[in-house]
Image (cartoon, rainbow, N blue to C red):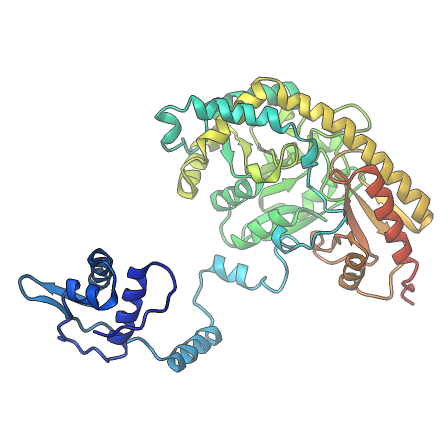
Length: 494
């Protein structure tokens, strides 16, 4: 038999592709007897083993069948569609909207807007990138972390290769309980903690456990877009609570959220404006939750970093009536790729959240969680926080000084007392849309991030979220200088 081999890859695959093409084109009709493997190997100047591999593959996929004592014969597979038919089918499938659930439809309706700004892989590499929420990777104690990973890998038992508990590693949950008591005033134990793959999974779990379509959820205005998206996808009706320099305005809860089942708040460092909620408002929020029979998700996404005033204990530390779900993450204090966060739950919610988590994953990777437990227990984690807090304070001061020197009274700055970013609001409107400002900034190597996505209605004047933790002081100064120079070329809106 003559076969044209294409020269691509192993020889048996070439034989397989050539013979499959002749069968699907109809050149080799059903019932045609194929040459013996020894004969075809001789014709092609290949080993018989190579031809046997090709025949085995064709048999496994139903193109040929072997008959004992008789040989191999062509079967009658489904005809391959023509290229024209394939193109027509593809065009039709693109034109017809898929039938989705209410959840899927909610996500599909928002595809015109970038999800969380944009994915990391889609962002251009810019020298002066003010991307927020990204810790300084170069300052992370990589060797200490590698030692923890290495010790756990070398000591791995059968347990380390098995499925994890849905709530996560017992060692990590125990280490977290001790750390949260020391650092955030949250008194809990391992049984009340669930380890998640970052804060977004925790928000998704809360949405699925609490929300039915039409239920009301209180969110901050402006507030974290990831929380809003998770609640909207579950069918929630959002009640937007205004924020000021002291965080969420609890005076609005009485009329705004009478029917609410859930509230998402960032009391230690309001996201994104940076207000810190004082004790009277925290007390008022907890009293509202008890009266309304609602729960509060306390999103403590960067509570470890406070640069002015004394550290504040978490809202959860005041939670006498078990109304607060405390959410933390290692994405900001270690690195985002670790994908480990945690929820501290009231006793009455532990079991239902455990069952919901079990439907999502098997508890996450054991090795990384137990290495993180060692990292915390050894003291390396808190040493890293202390060192990074000192570095970030220096970079924060550099950024604030550069903004004052370059932009002066043209801007207002919010949220500089804590966290990993500041919010910069221009006092005048620009004669170009925000997307064009971002594009022009990228041309001069500056990465800008508008705050528009955190508002239900975009702010009237340009508002930017500027992260500073991953930029060295010299680059912070130069980035602000380039931004000021760029703004100087753009006329104000009439």
